[in-house]
Amino acid sequence: MKRTKQILIFDLFETLIEDEWIDFNLGLKQLWEEHYRDKCSFDEIKAYGEELFIYMCELHKQGIEFPFVKDELTMYAERFGGEILSMSFEEEAGFLRRCNKVRVYDGLSEMLDIFREAKIPMYVLSNSGFRAGALKLILDELGIGAYFEEVWSSADFGKVKPSTDLFEMAVNMILEKHPDSDKGDILFIGDTYSTDVTGAYRAGLKVAWINRKNEQDAEGFSAYQLKEITELQMLIV
Image 1: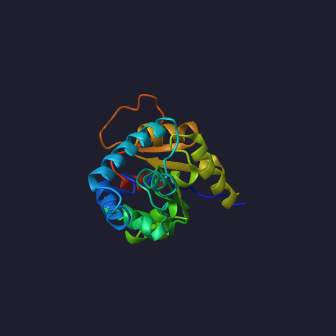
Image 2 (image 1 turned 90 degrees about the horizontal axis):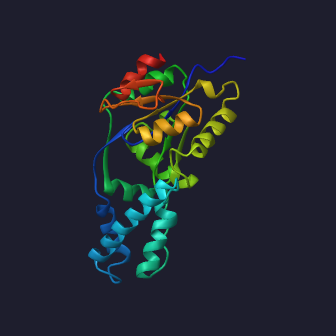
Image 3 (image 1 turned 135 degrees about the vertical axis):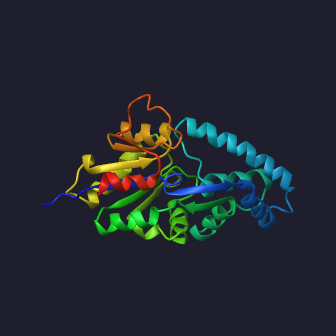
């Protein structure tokens, strides 16, 4: 049986797409206007949002995700009253779009075209409080969603990178879909050493580290170091 040439798993933010700016309060402002204007001031919900951000950071240190729709919206309702809100993927993507202005890195689409023509399976594994369905819509809007066979988010799984459980979930699903491959065929590409590089390495994957700041690989976990995502093309084809 012919083996797959290579399988790629990409981190999302600052790997495939760049955050030009982030302001969570821009999304929160509309949420307040639509659902909480008669229950609290914007300053009150903004202050609570800052408390929840600190809470999220503490959970992340424990390896636990804080999903926006499942958990954070519930906590706003519990604090200020009213029904517990839900969101479709489209509404969740709209909230994320208001908070984050993102762009695709220069030359990325052209590189992904080459990989697709070479029949290289590609996936996305993201640490995000927003569900994979919403992230996929953002990728579609940016014109690159169709390149990926699957998008996974920690919001759906409940754990964050560097949890090996999150990586192993992705690996198991990939190898189930590509039974002619093994873990050694998979390369993970990410920009954050503490989550992407460390987590993927400990899960037994080869790692290409996008090291834009020229930091030291103190642990020796990365198999490759890149300055920009498009340098990956020289490794793969």
